[in-house]
Structure formats: structure tokens, C-alpha cells
Image (cartoon, rainbow over all chains, first blue to last red; front, side, top):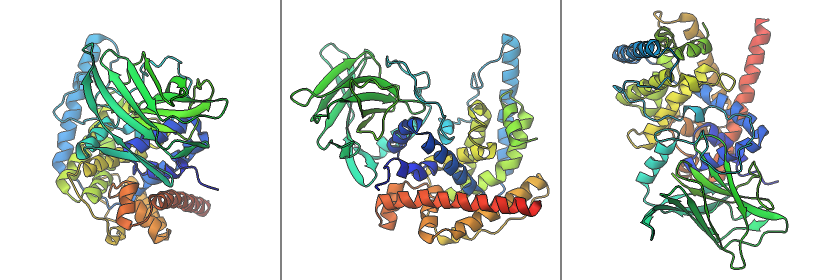
Length: 289
Length: 190
């Protein structure tokens, strides 16, 4: 029996050895598989214990002094602010920036939550969608900086490289458009051949998103494609279902801003494609950040 | 006080709790960062960034998902991986990295905690040594050198799928072996 391509990545996921795109695919998959969530939790704990095999070393004493100085100062500011406001406040509020901790993927490094997706049908930006400077967005930007054209999409034994092009255009109405492109995650998914499928995602300045698919295959009766927006942290948000027309194309503008999301993904679902939780494996994907 | 209790106190900006956590894990954190980056200055930066994240983002810790120590060390690891992938530090994994020798116990630190840490380090090292060489090497290249599975496949000249399998199966074996060791120790204590 052929192993599930995403489940095969769970070890690499626990060791942080996936590309951001692959990690997003696994993140999108996990909510639908409690067994895989459990495995990730167990493997992550083992991976964490590897740290103990490194030889402990004394850091420079100045580091302790520097950290405690920052911490004491922030604690005092927090207490002052709390007294002034008479209410609890956020940990990060007005934190000094003498040492910039920078963005972090801390939550990402913990095993995923067990809850399944029950998000609303309308694809408004998720409250857990990554804001500027959070999540693994900076890592994606780092990757983009290193590679003019970023190849991704290694899943299972089938490696389908989809070149991500980022094009910023201005349409006829003067609305800026950032365009991403995507393609198949695997050549055959659920018995459907996806070779040659190509799509673009236009993230528009008016907070709408236009998608255009070309080369869509004819799906079996009772099946439809479903588009998802996947945040760097959190659950995939369903956008809408569709099938290709007689020319095997599909295009539509959705009233949703894709900018806060990390990945646009497409799965094959039961028609009309309005599932609340994506069925895996993923069929198509495009990196958005 | 447990690690988890200390992290909970960070949410109330308890700097004493931070100091206790730092003293408990600074050597392990610096050792991990140094092993990954092989540059003391870079390791110092990573540990500083990581502990400030622990301080500022204590509310993101979920005790039901992992132990506090795992959480802290995962932050250090992730920061070091980020730095490696930015290309600001380089590291080559060699078999010498497996030659773990328990370090001295610094009497100025929490002795009980240090002793436990050393015992666990020995156990993890022993279990790593029980893995088939190809699995151990893949895990070390991923965890300590911060390489992606694709990069590991390139360095080892094996298919990506093979690397994914080695990483997953290797970790599964480690878990089984560590669980057996804990059962054995518990039985021995009883």
C-alpha cells in the first residue's frame, strides 16, 4: 500500500525540516486527521528531547545581565501601565524594543489543536490569520529573497514543481493587484489527473480576490473543487466550490482579502464543494506570502 | 516550582520566574544553539532572542500540548534554524557530533535539575546510537544542521521520499526506545 504523502512528511514536520509551503500543507491537513495530530504531538516531543543531547555550555555572563535588565524594565512598565489602566493588558503592549525578539513561530512549534474546522462559509480573514511580523511569513520572505523563482511542491514520491511568480500590476480601475501562481500538488489526486492545471490568484487592493484556473480536468459525478485560504497558523477557511466549464477554465472574484493568508489551496470535495473541513490530499496550491 | 508553573507566572510579568527559567535552561539552550551554529556570538544572539520570546509570548504556551522545557528548547531550535537558513551561520554535521560526553555539573545552578538533565542527555544519546546509522544521520542533519528534507536528500544522494521515511521512522523508533527506558526506570525505582 502506498503511504499517504502528507503523513510521510510528519517526521520532517516535527523536526522543522519542511519548507514553509510544505509545512502549510501539513498544517492544512492536520485538522482533518486526529491520528496524525497525535503522531505529530508524539514526534515533536521526541524531537524536543534531541536538544538535551547537545553538550550544555555556559553562556556569557553578560547575556544574563542583559536579559534581566530588559525583563525588569518591561515588568516595571507593565506594572505601571496596569496600575494606570486598572485592568490587565496584553503582554506585548508597549514592550521596549532595545532587543528585538522579532517574529516567532512559537505556536507553530507546538503540536496542533485537536479541534476540527467549523469556520463560517464566508471567507472573511480568520481571527488567527497572521498579521505583519508574525508566524512564518518572514521565513517565506527569506526564501523568496534567496530564490528568484521559488519551486515547491514535493509531496510523496511525486514531485511537481510549481514556479511561484509574484507580479504586481495595476488594473484598469487603478486597483493594485498582486498576482500569485500555483499548480498541482500531485499529478493524480483521488483518481483525477491534474497535470497541466495552472491557476492565478489576484490579491486586489480593493480587498477582493480573483482566481483563474486553466486546464481543469472533468471531475467524476458528484465531485467539485473547493478553494481554501490557509493562514500560517490556524484552520483553513473555505472560500467556495467550483467545476471547470466546457473549456476547462474557471474564474471568479470573491469578496475576501487573501492578503493575510499564507496559502491558497484546492481540494476535491463532494459537490457542490461546500465542505467545512478539507478532504486530503490537497490537489492544487499557491503560496500567497 | 515546576517549569509549567514558572511559565504561568511569566504571564503576570514575574521577573523572578523568568530568572529561574533562564538559570534552569540557559546552559542547555546555549549548548543547543552553539552545536547548531558553531559560533558563540550567533548562539548568544539566538538564546537572547529565544528567551525574550519566552518572556514576551508566554501566553502562547499550551501545557496540554507539550512540556515547558520542550517549548523553550523548541523556540531556541527554531531561532537557530531560522538563522541557519538565512545563511548567517553554517554548520557541517559530522559523526563527531555524536560523541557526547556529560559535562560537569555546575554547583552554582539547580543541582537536581542539572543531574536530571544529564541523565536524560545520556539516555537520548544512547537511544540515538541505537538507531540505524542512516536514520540517525538524517535526524541529526535535520535537527542540528537545520537542513530541509530536500537538502538532506541532496547531500546524501538519496530520494526525498527515502529521507522522509528515515526521519519519520527514526523518530518513531526513538519514541519507542525512550518509552521503554522510562518503563524500565520506573520498574527499577519501584
